[in-house]
Length: 335
Image (cartoon, rainbow, N blue to C red; front, side, top):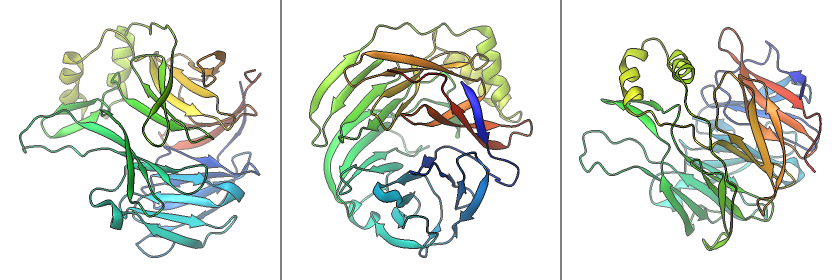
């Protein structure tokens, strides 16, 4: 794995959680806190930024994700407005928007992806925390198939929400917590992976399970150094609040899977559980669960996108905790 590009100081981000790449290798990075999208060249150099705060055409209140569509049109999803905006190839002006919230009859999706036939959406619904309302039911995520206008078509999945540390009314993601991942391949099959095992259930968009694979794997034990690293990663002001909660909820082992991505050749990449000080192993499988190979990502980098040609796009924080985009090239791509 070698680094072949990185964003510079002229490309300023407050957070990087997702990105996408067009057919020319141009990188599109949304910044939800700045309500804008930054475009980088294939080597990570800044090209332009567009978008601003608001509710008009081409404006955002938040940007959860971006998706390059066929022909390099760009889709941007704003969960605060419940709206999808599509930009023509290379354009900073909105071509059209779709208000999904009007047909949903409830909360907008946390995130969504347009299906590859271009007609519908795969949407993830994630509940908010509700303190002081009784009940105590476990939070559950839902994955639904939505029509082009946001109207519900099918409920596909329901599973436990990502684990959080909870102290009173304060919350933060559990560094060793379990979660579920739903990913869409080019044939619009949904691969669902629970992080506690190296396994995938496969569904069609009608909600029928059409396949499954499982690979034997025992994740490493959580060490004292892992615990210390998790505490050190917390903001200093939060550490006294969440340290006791972490201690009381500490599992014996890491989750088997810490991240899931599908590349443009439908390889399923899973980040295997392990400490943050060591290089992260991402293992690739085909749709039947056959192992294809692995790559090691330098510690401190979070993989955001993998391409079939061996290009890997990640985010990495500098010494001032400012995130940057980093581009890697695999020494050898999986077979």
